[in-house]
Image (tube, rainbow, N blue to C red; front, side, top):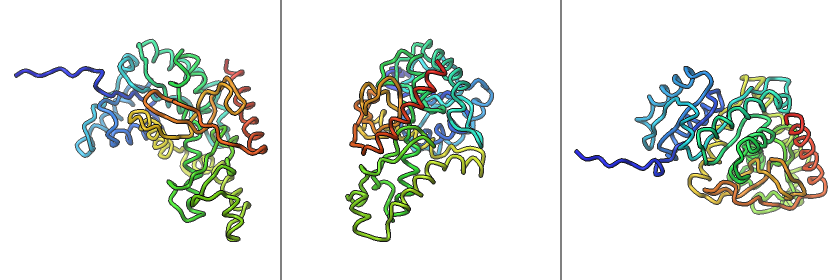
Length: 320
């Protein structure tokens, strides 16, 4: 019986480098998302990747669409549309993400070199911390255009923020339009002046209803800022939400959504900064970062943004 061969170009392949908690959380969610036909797991501990692939494959009969999943090597990146890098040391209790910079830069640089040696010519998504610094390291090592190297940036912080804001205003997080920008984690800030809740500005909501206060919003910011440390204290690592955050980025690319997502984008003059990746809202489509969205910041917010820029630039200088 004649069987027509499918052109590999017609098959969407996503490779995940790093079979730790974050990588496998993302891979699990991707296996149920009907976004790709092939999913490759790559890890320095090949047996770990083999075991994770087996476990994921055993649930494929329940998935919405078929996915071929296997533990591979860097040569499998050649035909990948997207490579997601999660490899590297995880943040421990008492550490800042910047404490991981030197160690993880070596890992991310080596991973990126091996990915590119395969002939890969797709989109890199980087989640290794400190994510903005690691996205820059991957971009420099890859030689890819800046639009095709995306850090997870502040996608997780923004999701945490919208969840807490939704609780406060009794509104779905999907309808809380507010951004967490700058650094992922403790060094970032909330662009409150640009936020829209119920279609209204924060200032308008505070003026109209005395049950809301800036002090409460400041408390929300602190809870979002410190969320990772609290989760690490309770259960050693955070991985489900960032797995979903990575899925959000990948979905925007694969489905050519033209969606605005707060990711780690390379700036060339936007917000008065250049030569680094940093968390900003950006328009994502099939080509990667189509456009960086420059929202209006207050003077204080711009100062906080500039402070994030300075810290990231110093970390980049240290690892380079």
